[in-house]
Image 1: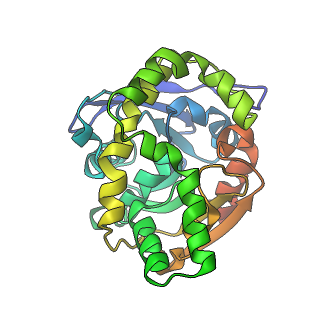
Image 2: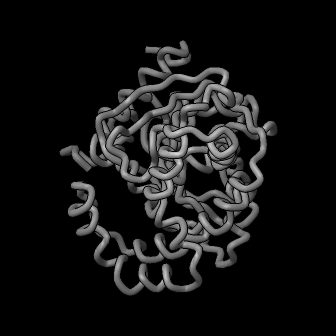
Length: 301
């Protein structure tokens, strides 16, 4: 993280239907609850910098997604489907904010799964706002792809081609055993160095990195092609902020061109940062979240 002070957090656990989830909590009890959902191949520790800048205004909670950090680690691909991830999120918010809706903030695969939460009718009224960064809804992407293939144009086909190139790793992750072996034998111990070299981002080594990467591959196998090939109409039931990292090497801004169709209350904001903006610019990320929530009139001084 880029800050000189590491915020103090407390660790606890929540029992979800599938297993036990590890939670980190910063901030002040009695403030609005904010739930942060990390992406791949991260765990909840990636939110420390952002939490430092939000803890004065929010009761900030981050949890290790199943398969990551100190949370339970199912082995079957089917255990990583969006429906199971929704059960986990529901267990978390029922534990940390049973009577009030939460502000949901997510990045990368945390954002992909959080689109499921904010479009799930059963969770309507449980999410006060949603901030999404660098992780689109798989269903929305499915419709986005269909539109460009059914009505081809030079710009549309160019967008499809560019995103296909950026998504090369998704195809690689469909291979059996090889991606896991790569994480456990090579990438796990070299990930901090690769992040510095490829993204100019500093991260601390962590003991769970190899397993976080290896098990998290199941998120892609369980959901990506199944959702995009048979997309469902999913409409957001909470006001949503889309944070667009302009230098993202993995997610094209064009993927969100049609998002107004699915999100009645949509705001957009660009950040001059790469994919791991939460680590590169935690203060700017936190400020964008705070200003968005303040604009809704739900954040009191």
